[in-house]
Image (tube, rainbow, N blue to C red):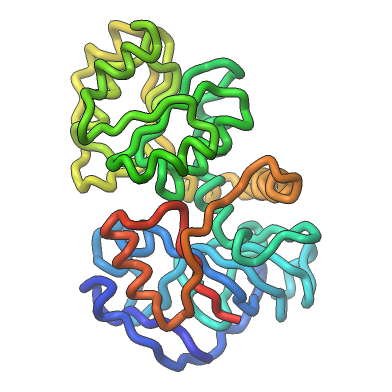
Length: 325
C-alpha cells in the first residue's frame, strides 16, 4: 500500500512516497481505510527529530486520521468493518491504511465529513482536556489563548466560546485576527506589535486572566505568568517557539495561581476510558455544530512534505488535511 515514509530525522524535505506492507490488527487494534489525515505541528517535530519520542525508522508519520474500519483484532467489541471512525495514534496516519487502538477510535455521527473529523481529536481533545478536565473552566471566566489561529489554539478559542468564556486571542500577525474573531474571540492581541501585559491589563481592568492557554512558550509564557488573576490557572500546552521557559516561583505564590501541565496524549494512554468518553463528547459537539474545525486547505497525500513546511513556517490557519481516498 502507498504511504509517506520517514527514513531519517532530517525534516519534511526528506519524506518520500513509498510502498509498504499492509498492517494487520491484533488484540485491541483496528485496521482503517484512511480517507483523510490532518497535518499537525507535532508531526513536523517528529520527522525533524525535535519531539520527545523518536519512532524506529523507517516509519509513517501522521497522528490523526479518519476513515472506514476494514478489520478488527479479536479483543475489539465496539467497532466492526464498515464503521466510519476518527482515530489517533503516535504514527501511521499518512498511508492508505493504518492501525489504531480501539480506545483511540471514535464513531463518526451521521453527516460528519471525513476531512473535518480528521482534525478534531488532537486539536479539540487538547483544548477540551485543558479547559474542562484541567482548568475546570467556569462560564464568565477570562481565557487567553496564544497561537490562536493555529489548530490547537483555534480549537481552544472555539471551545472556550461554547463554554461561555470571555476569549482573548493572541496572534503573531494581523492577517490572522479576522479568523479568530469569527471563532468567538472578543479581543485580539498581536503580541509581536503590542505590549502583551499592558493589553491584558487594559482588557481585564487590571485584574488579569483566569485561564492562560499557551502553545508557544518562551517570552510569551513569561509575560502571561505576570498577567494572571488571583486563583487563576496557567497551562503550558507546547513550545512552538522552541524555547522552554523557566518561571520565578514567587509569581504563582503571590497570586495563588496554579500551573497545570497539559499532555493529553499521556493522559489518554493512562486513562483510556475517560479519553474515549471525551472523544465521543467531541464528536457530538461537532455533529451538533457546537464546534467548527477550520480546514485551511486539502492536499493530496503526495504533498505531505509541503503541508509540513507550511505548518513549520506558521502560514497555516487551523489545519491542513491530506485527502487519501
